[in-house]
Length: 193
Ligand SMILES: Nc1nc2c(ncn2[C@@H]2O[C@H](COP(=O)(O)OP(=O)(O)OP(=O)(O)O)[C@@H](O)[C@H]2O)c(=O)[nH]1
Image (cartoon, rainbow, N blue to C red):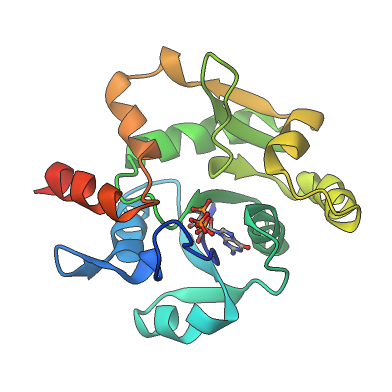
């Protein structure tokens, strides 16, 4: 399975490209990628990047596919699916749990649904820690053409399968930690040292 790492955001809340900020001497996005490399179900990692960041990420030694849509995460997922079915994560998720990633992929392969998305008991979805099939593409195309870029809405309108987070080991929830602000870097440092 391909893992697609979304890296085309604007980091407005962070103020400066959060994915390149060094944590423990290493850019944030490499922390995310190195966690994915530990997942046994993943055999290829591709970064779905903005044009500006493509060369920088290639210089780290990773494959890059440029997102030409730049309409938010939905465009990143759409771009990723041009490669085939994919496990899609945000590049700002440095505490990914490889076993959880494998669990989602196994469910996705078994369910044969257009998407397999973690869901909290209150209904909140985690679409940037989810598996998508090429069968999800027609709906995405329709949404994009109609100017509706809300990925959660697209997932809900599809025949997705859901992974109920509260039924899984509690320690896996750390997988969803993501960096949005400078303050989150402090929280991350506390967790990784
Ligand atoms: N390829 C791609 N990735 C995106 C796009 N928008 C957001 N992302 C990525 O999706 C993940 C989650 O993005 P957010 O943190 O919600 O958005 P952001 O634009 O990075 O940050 P804010 O400006 O603070 O909202 C990050 O890894 C982003 O790099 C996009 O248009 N294309």
